Image (cartoon, rainbow, N blue to C red):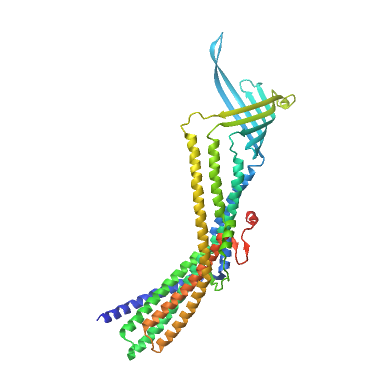
Amino acid sequence: MIKQITSVYILLLLPLFTLKAQVADTYFQDESEDEIEVEMSLTEVIELAHKQSLYSFRSENMYLARYWEYRSYKADRLPILSLDATPVNYDRSVVSRFNADQGEYFDQRSYFTSDASLSVRQSVPFTGGVFNVTSSLSRSQNLDDSEDIQYASVPVSVGFNQPLNGYNRFRWEARIEPLKFEKAKREYLQSLESLAIRATDYFFGQVTAEINLKIAETNYSNADTLYNIGKGRFEIGTVTQDELLDLELELLNASMEVTKAKVNLRQARAALGSFLALEDNMAIDCIVPDEIPDLKINPEQAMALAIENNPEILDFQQRIMEAQQSIARARSESGLSANIRANFGINKNADELGIVYGSPFADQQQVRVSLNIPILDWGLRKGQIQMARSNRDVTEATVKQDRIDFEQELFISVMEFNMQEKQVEISAKADTIAQRGYDVTKQRFLIDKVDVIKLNSARNSLDAARRNYISSLRQYWRSYFQMRQYTLFDFVQEEPLMKELDELLQQ
């Protein structure tokens, strides 16, 4: 009775699954009519990702931002010419006055002034001071008396400002900023390898989806053939009803797997197309890279290259320098703070603009020394120094541990990569053996030498072997680009990835 109910249930579900498969086939056929398929290898996909993917665009602009930050640091050390002007300044005020005849009275005054100055500023990195040359002109007019106009000129004024607290930001910037820019260049090159890893994931994600669809279609074809054979044998009594129902259920499951595999393939193609910024009507036909480089990496060589090229090593140095800089800054702000400013020039006041620049001029001299001496701060500044020292100690300990972790992670990655070639070879052989085993089992089933259970087991082994082979290829190329990312070195061409980025800046 249970067998009869199961048979009726399957017969009822069969039209539904058939209808779903037909609808799915019609949907994918309609969507694929206008698609343009382009065959591309993994290398070509990576090159296209470098050219037009959003990730590449973002990496380039992050590098450009760091480049202009470095240019700003360089420009700060060059002479800077600037113009400061106040074209309009109206001032109206009431002043209280007193005389013997009138007593206290109020006098209203209205002035219109304007001024402009042209200055050249030059930083002095050796001392940390600032040298400047200024020329200025101002005009002042009493609006209550139209003839009361005064001009004041400073044809040239030379000044120098020098802090005496012992902290020279220019020296610290000269040590840190070039290091930051060099790190930015290497981070950009590293981002290209990260982009290759992402492209590899999307590429093999589609390849896996294509393999799964082929497996699903093959399984459906085999299930349909076996079901038809089973029906014939059921009629002559060599196949039981249970076995026939199993074959029919396998056919239904295979039909659903085909539909699901088509959906997954559509999603994988859309993900790859979106990553590569392709048009909606374009699709990539992935060419699986069956051949891999015959490559073994020496761990000692990889470690030396990573220490020489990896931006994390520069980041370790930068973090320690910045911690030391914080201590130097805290020390300069904790004790006697002094600043000296000297200014020498000539000036002249006149009623007419034509003679305000005429000789003779009056001398203008100024020397100012300012001091700030902490008397009682309740240990505030001492605490700031101790906090800076504690931060430095923590940074040094953290960097030391990060360096150890980095070296261990790199060593493990090298060992894993060196095993990937063997894994690919084994999985390729396993795929070949599984295919032969399935073919033999299928032929024996056709001559009624094995049952359905053994046939299904052989098919499952074949499917797993194919998927494992694609997975091993994917893991090999991911590991390969990870090694390039660690070391910024091309082990196939045996040359460093470090290169000039002038072409990028000219785009």
